[in-house]
Length: 624
Image (cartoon, rainbow, N blue to C red; front, side, top):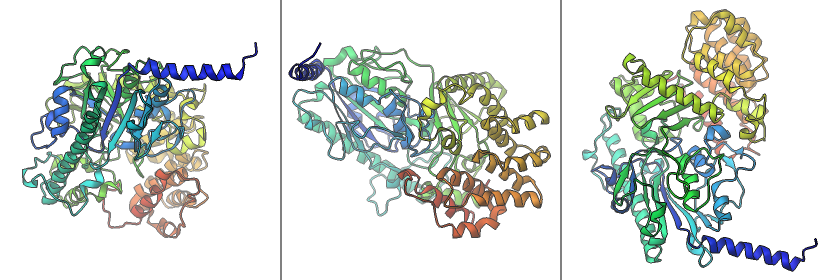
């Protein structure tokens, strides 16, 4: 039947009006966020902190004692927030990558807008997924809930950047907290500059608290406090070294305060009490479904998180999960799980130290001084660990070891706990189709512009169940029969080949030299990650012609014709080879740079940082 245009427009107008009216009895939702700080706040028992505004919010709201970001660096953490999906499942786990978002899985602001909410983000986005330009009603430094139509409920984010890592090292600085009164963590050595960095960190946390106070006062002046559910949280742990970028509890734990007015008491969980606290485990992965639940929207089943407030409250979860992928110019593959007491860390590149050189991190005085003391032999065993290879497994008991110093992974008395957490972690990885075992250059080659989330779910593309045991076995340095290793080196699956090579990288040299001929063959592998890993092993374990072949192969990728990911793969190996690759330095000095025409903003410093570090023969960090 033909429907007149006037009737159709009237129906659309009615539908929009109905959405707004039906949302009128919904709460406003305000998220006040801040960067690079953990629970160093008065309401979390830190007596050195000066945070009166957030403390006052906690005094009338609910404090979460154990909240985790999903990553200890901003862009991957925000990617989990916006999508409700684990970034390693979407391919958005590497710092400031830009991958296609999953099809038909809209980010949570879309759901809120469909439910009649006016959504604003002020102002940082920094997502690793390519999302619609009109995702928010407003996303800018001027975005504000006051711009909404009359009577429309709002969802608003205000993000403070004054506590960012870069502010710790900004000089000159007007001191508030006394450096002499700082209690240093046991892994940071004693030094006046380190004390100043810590005192300045507390100063900038106070500044974020003051900004939060302004937002709360503004809401109150508008008469909206009792109509608004308020969240306050940080985006990951402190910006101090060994916190930010560290996928342990100290880098992941964040403050999280939620205030739910009496008007919306029906949206409170059973453990909500004004001024109270809860031990419920919550993570960033849970914030998107929780926002929807508070707005009366049932979270879609495909979201990985679980609502911890609202009409669609889920049962508490036993575990929280986190990760580290590439951080700026540094490749890594780390996965973490906690049950609230124990933290288990699985390092799939166990030869890397937690303090692997990241150019941006080395600018902070604490990082430089700490490393200089380490190189001079002036750090004790606890302070040196940050600069030494991580090993495959770590296990910490937060109750007895809150600083995560005593690694219990090899302690027989804790074997059952280690194995329980490891099993739960791998089940989680398999259930979410974690892309941990797909290195970035290979992902670019195989996936291209398709959504990694959708690609990995197409039959035949990613055999997690086969690759995971091989990668897990190899990266623990466990013995494997030579015939099996040789078969894996020539397997049809590039990921089997790659992770077998990764395992040989940490093997005893006497076990590696028998595969020299295989490494030569793999120089022609269609996977750049496989071929440069083979070249790495030829340089490390070969002689004469073997070494030359490996270096020549690495050299061929140092050209503007290489893609960004091919360059990164080759330069990372060259950098890790240190003085073994000094013959390539002249070509690297003459390298004109990569084509930046279509390069994502987040990538532009990675290759220059690697090149600068390769050519730094003063060895300002721990070489592998």
